[in-house]
Amino acid sequence: MRLPIPAARAVTPAPISLRWAKAFRAVLLGLVYVAVAAFALNSFQLKWGFRDGIDAFSLERQMDGTAWRPVVYRVLVPRVAAAVAPHLPQRLVDGLITHNIGSDDDPKRSSVLVRYGWRRHYFVAALVAYFVQFASLIVTLVASRALVRETLGFGRAFCDFAPAVGMTLLPVTYHLGGYVYDFPELAFCAVGLLALVRGRLTTWYACFVLACLNKEADVLLAAWFVIFWWRRVSFARLVAHGAVHVAIGATILLGLRSIYAGNAGASAQFDLYTNLASYVRASTLFGFVDYFAPFIPFPRPFNLLSLFVIGSAVAIGWREKPQELRWAFGVMMVLLLPLVVVTGHRDEVRNFSLAFVPFCLLACHTVHRVYTALGDPAPSPRSS
Image: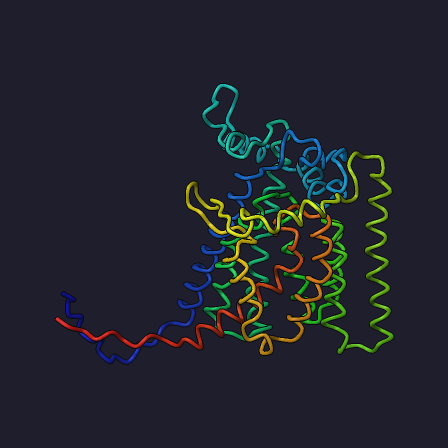
């Protein structure tokens, strides 16, 4: 028997202090973003850490320049960690070591080393890289919030919390691989796209250079410049900017390949036949993985359920979505798809990371469109 619930009385809302409301929103949003970023970072570190003990692509080997190609080309975060760590105040370093890993006589305090598999002799550099990853996630959330507002024009609550909801699904993307440069790449994509939307070329070029130093494949971001700026500038200026992008990308890419030409490995790994075979396996199309907690299954990225959600997020209301976002996503997928099929690793969706930000914006449009179409449910009748 349903208990009677008295109807809400019609009460005129009392005025709220605007400063109080703004302070509440800022603190709430800050706490939510920190919690979500910490969740994503912790899940990444528990799964992959910094790949210590694997000479091919560990952070330690990246810092000393002996990692295998192509991982050794991704120099930004390892170089920042190696450069910053020696200059941290010794008092701070001692406090961090004592708090996080304890002393030789206090092994129970070695939680970080045990939990994430870090090696003690380069703990401070690993901690710098760790905070770079965390800062990258926070920047991604803040920039994504601004992108939702400025490209889609939705309400404040949707813009505030949609990026946080999206980031809770991030562990799905690094099930088969995860590296120290993955989160900074997301940040550069989000900030770079926001800079293009706002017309801030200095910020865009800074993001482009840093993104290329972070991962050489990010030279493909130059396509976004053409998509967002071909109507804003003359053809001659567009060609000039294109030449600048080519010069920056070629200088960084060819320079890094020349410096590390003698390292083991190869610039790319050919896995076409392995990947094609994996795409049609039952374990791929119907498989589940416990990404978030042991024994709690969740569809793999190429599971038919996942593909339905991904396809619907793009397709629903396609013509209503902003044209530049459609092109930014579509062109990037056209560029990435052959590379992923030929050189990727099965359904490692992380390899589509350059398309993540425009995809998430398209998905936000779809979610808003779907819930608007569904409307609010009618109040249920109350009975005793």
